[in-house]
Length: 209
Image 1: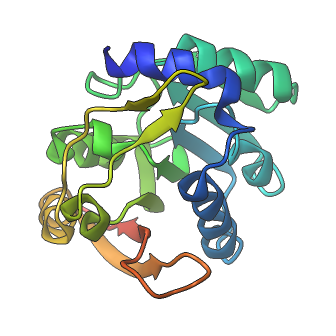
Image 2: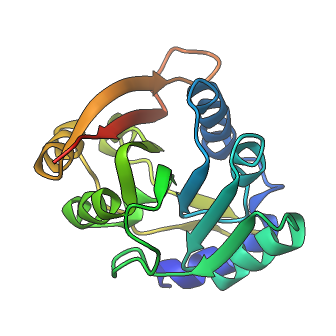
């Protein structure tokens, strides 16, 4: 099953099934981004809009991109705010939004499905204003090394999605190549705090040319 078909299938239960990664990602996003000021936001892999609701507390406009029509359908049903526009897009291709139009780009639980980080950071550099921030929250590579992948359960089976592993150094190399500097790095653990961190988050800042 393709990643797109898998997320289309997952969409109906994505917000309601048990999912520690989804819930911790939402917590991390709020805790990190509440400290930053932003107005125009580009949300990569917006899914069902689970983080869009929080972003709307601060943003004046949001464009959410996702390749899953069913995820976007759920987002549009849930969020009727005129400040938000949801668009179907393949993040592996040029993003059809204006250059230098955003002061924040967010990317949550998406890059494990993207092979080429350089392309993502290149596009982010083009779309961000100078001094804009690029927030990333992803499954920690330690979890991936241990065999963890995006997955969901139906009544019949557990569906495991195909993913790519990105090392921490991969994020830094791509960021540096495309003009970003690190502002903040956090590792996020489950409540028991005894195993590998579940998530890793970065805030990068676009420098001036």
